[in-house]
Amino acid sequence: MKILYVTTIGLTMGFFKDLIKELIGQGHTVEIACNESDRPVDPFYHELGCPVHQIDCSRSPLSKATVKAIKQLKGLVETNRYDVVHCHTPVAATCTRLACRKLRKTQGVKVFYTAHGFHFCKGAPLKNWLIYYPVEKLCAHYTDKLITINHEDYSLAQRKMKAREVLYVPGVGVDLKRFQNVFVDKAAKRRELGIPEDATVLLSVSEVNENKNHQIIIRAMARLQRENMHYMIAGSGPLADALLQLAQSLGMADRVHMLGYRNDIPELCYAADIFCFPSYREGLGLAAIEAMACGLPIVTSNVHGINDYSQNNVTGYKCAPKDTDGFAEAIRKLADDPTLRKQIGVRNVKLSESYDVSRIVPLMMEIYHPISSSQGEESSSVFCEKIQEGTIRQ
Image (cartoon, rainbow, N blue to C red; front, side, top):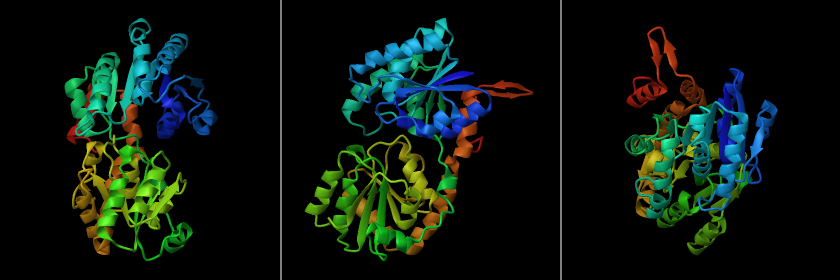
């Protein structure tokens, strides 16, 4: 097969390395289309020999660049005659499906769309439903396989989206080998970060934006009034300064650590005691699963894809995104009970295995190649329904 992957920015391609390596290993050709001027594709793909095509796509759904990107994609697909065009992220997926609307009939191209978490979900702002829902509903008509990564989106897509097939696969996969069995000198790592060795350390890993809701953890810490509790935030984004100002206003400027973009996430996890993930919306949330793989208990919001793995009294605790007292109490329980943290951590390592990339890649390969057996062929939709029902173990 000749396959085109389409993402809004090149950075997103970092999630698909194992799958694309497998596709190429089985003799398929994979090309990439994205906006390389905004976070380029990982050099890994150039080493694999994947051609990269520039499209002037913008992350803003209302950008004028959208019309240009549609024309660019249409010309690219017409010229190169791909068998499959697999799109990701809302804007790129909209451009792709509109560009391929007629080409699905005239050239027989199949359009796959992996929805990495619908922007409209339970509790999402009304504007998200007004902007994103009508577009997704329309474009579903031009989608051969709509792949969802959490149960809430899967259920909604089955009921509301008229794609040819609606499928469920539990995420893009986590390379657990990178996070498990990592040796870290916890005390030394804390000294490097300027955090007391005996502190209770909270950690969040994500872009620093409004959706990630870091402020609720800072406010929860203020409620607890514990001088020896520190909060590390690994990631960059537009709200970094605002979070520091909030911490200063609450008298905790020396206990909130904005670490910026980091390449040592496994080490940070092993240096922490509790992982916090209070987002308003998440398609799944790989950072929390990575923390689980490191043996950390998690404190999360009770929304969207997070609910697929976050369980009260099992993986840690979860609260409504705006429940400051709830987050404070959840953090207190774990901070006060090292034995409980350890018990939950051991359990979380095991639970994270369901999301290992070694399990996800074969599921995606089945979507590209429906199961064949001596009894006949079984479609990928039936296969993914069995995953949903638990009759095939992940």
